[in-house]
Length: 207
Image 1 (cartoon, rainbow, N blue to C red):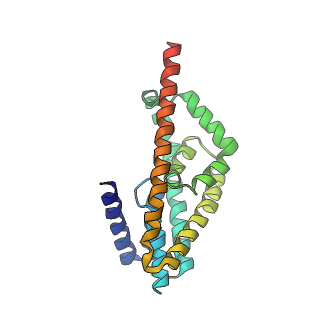
Image 2 (image 1 turned 60 degrees about the vertical axis):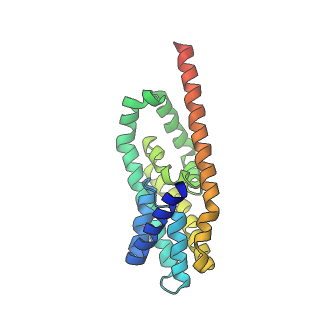
Image 3 (image 1 turned 90 degrees about the vertical axis):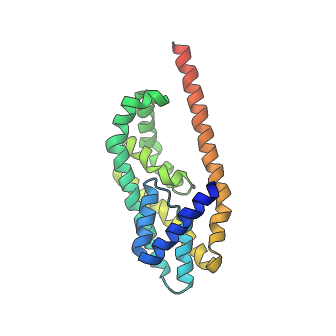
C-alpha cells in the first residue's frame, strides 16, 4: 500500500517536470520543503536523467532545485514563526508540549540552530520538516536562510548528478533510498513515543 502511494506521487512528479521543466522542479522542491509529499529523491534524479537525455542543463536543474528548496523552507519557517508558537502554547498540553519546552527549543536553536538546520537538510524525512521548528523557535532568519542554502545545495547537486549518471535507471536511486526513508521515519516515531511516555510519567509524578 505504501509503495503504491509512493509510486503514484512519483508518476505525478515525473509528469509535472516533463510538462513544465525548470519551473516544475522549482515548484516541486518548494512544496516538499513545506511538508507536502513531493520527494526530492524523485524530482532531482529524474531531472538528472533529462540532463543525460540532452533535454536539460545540469546547472540549471541544481539551481532550480536549490532555489525551490530555499523558498519553500522560508515559507515553512514563517508558518512556524507566525502560527506555530501560539498554537502550541494554546493546545500543546494535549500533546505534552509546554511553554517551558518551547523556551528550551528556542534556546537550542539560538545556540545550535546553524548545525541543526544544516545537518537536518541532509537527512531524509527530517529535511522536509526542519523549517517548522526553526520558525517556532524563532531562529535568526538570516542564519536560517544561509544554513538552509548550504544544506540543500549539495543535496540537489548530488541527486541531480546521480540521476544524470544513472540515465534511464534513475528510478533505482529512489528504490535504494526507500529503506533509509523508512528507517529515519521509524526512528523519529520511536523518539516521539518515548518523549510522550516520559512526559506522561513526569506529569503523573507532579500530580
